[in-house]
Length: 243
Image (tube, rainbow, N blue to C red; front, side, top):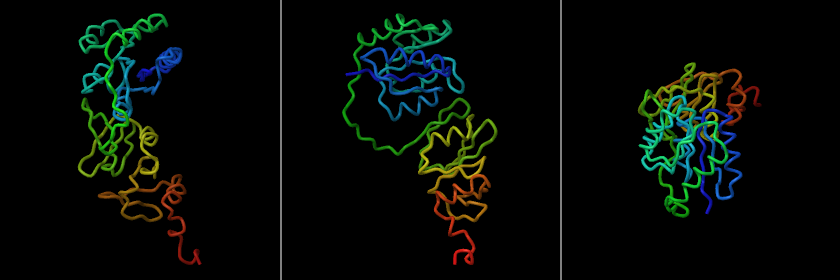
């Protein structure tokens, strides 16, 4: 059985190097590449991962903080340009600590340690009972938010406000990031500053959408796709134009 690998590093070059190494080893399978620890945290909730290649210094959440957050982290190999975090890494029971740039021979030596540790048994076809969710970071805390609870999202320059049925969370991220992350069949960009959950739309006019507890503008640029996706283009035309 192949070892499923996840690569986490905010440097594209480092990711590409590790990905090329993984693809050269027949017993390894690349299941994902993440540019942040927060993104990796979310992916780890939905994909089985046996081996984690993890950078330390990343924006929002460090690699070490990610390991401390995970209740049952996969086997982990640290990849870092800094030697001073090695002790912290080994205290978290990592398999190895690689200094960038990582030579292929050193990579293979670290991978060899995986086979000296007993890998956890993965049950076939696990039944997933939880509703889909994501984690967002507010200050130093990762907050779990169910997708079904999200009502709307608002861009605040370098931050995004996520409004749920019970609270509002502000996280350092872009609205474009969440537009890519959230399923398009459930969420809709209606303005350069706003996204809404389709299921939470209460009513709408040609220029505004009312969701639970809030009325939001429809941007001129986004209006055609909003009307098309909600299938209301003909309904919002004046009656005389429809006849």
